[in-house]
Amino acid sequence: MEIKYIIDTLFALFAMTLIIFMVPGFAMLEAGLVRTKNVTAVLTVNVMIYAVASLAFMLIGYSLAFGSWDNDGMSKWAAFLFQMAFVGKTINIMSGGVSERARIIPLIFFTVIMAAIIYPLVVNVTWGANFLAGTALDISSMHDLAGCTVIHSTGAWALLAAILIIGPRRRRYGKDGKVRVIPASNIPLVVLGALLLWIGWFGFNGGSVGSISSKENADLVALTIMNTNTAGLAGAVIVALMMYLKYKKFDITMILNGALGGLVSVTAGADIFDMYAPIYIGAIGGVIVVYGVALFDKLKLDDPVGALSVHLLNGIWGTIAVALFASDISLWAQIKGILVVGIFAFTSSYVVIYVLNKFSPFRANDEEQLEGLDIEECGVEAYPEFKRTI
Image 1 (cartoon, rainbow, N blue to C red):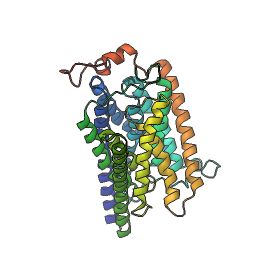
Image 2 (cartoon, helix red, strand yellow):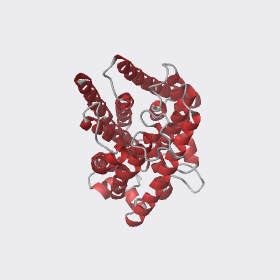
Image 3 (cartoon, rainbow, N blue to C red):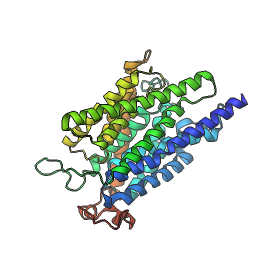
Image 4 (spheres, rainbow, N blue to C red):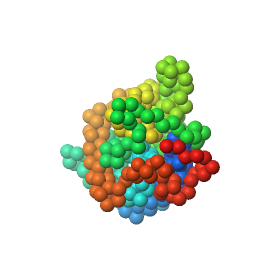
């Protein structure tokens, strides 16, 4: 029993460390996708989210989510650290999608509320203490291994609320309805960030199995990680094919977003799929990203990193896919979970952002956006030798 306790504690700590690799993953991905005049601001936001969200979750959120710190299977400190590693990802999804026009201070205020209250309440009714148990809104029967709905959709619903309130970047959409293309500033950083996220996903999904100290659990962890990787591969390949067939070009930013879409889409059920299902699930996830990016631009929902397509649409798809590709999973249970979490996450985030926006405006004005948030918000340029562009 003591050996099992030690092994599972080490496993949780190792998985937590892999998940923390997603902090520089999000930072590098976003830094590469935004213009050079906003890179320092994006990096600052990512660092502050990790620091502030982790403390807020430790002091308030964890107890709200799980009701107790007690854990018989491993060190309670390791169990906490593993769960703490998740919380910032929810807010990273939101912050990346409002890059280049959102101020740092209101984002930090929102981070505190999301990490201390909104996200923990979602965890409570899905993975945690479940104050909705026995009610008509009980969604604990939804199968969501590592957070297709609990993490990815929750963060993306918050992003949708933020975009509706904050609006698009300066000159992103013309009066004639045309979309102004704003190219990525640093492709190597985009690739580095996406691959760090991909590696972190092995701890994200594999660690969510919860134990590796028996032969059965070791096999299950290995299968979960293999399925996670397979879905990412399928998402990347299908988007590469789509880009080449349509444009005769390989767009690396879309290929990587296709991979991330595949990784999101398998997150709910990587532990219960056979080795072939993730190919279909991840490929569909990649297709969803391609059409999702175009859809959100048509709706004039400005999302510089494609987070709505990757995390919202594929969070929904991945949760539904569990019922379609695995046996004994209720489709209604999955849809009900999507609806309950979606309505709560969007509504609560919208109210919080709306109120915060009255006291500390989220949106930088046009002059500040023209100058760049590095100067306006941080006083430090990431690339001081480069000429800033509009």
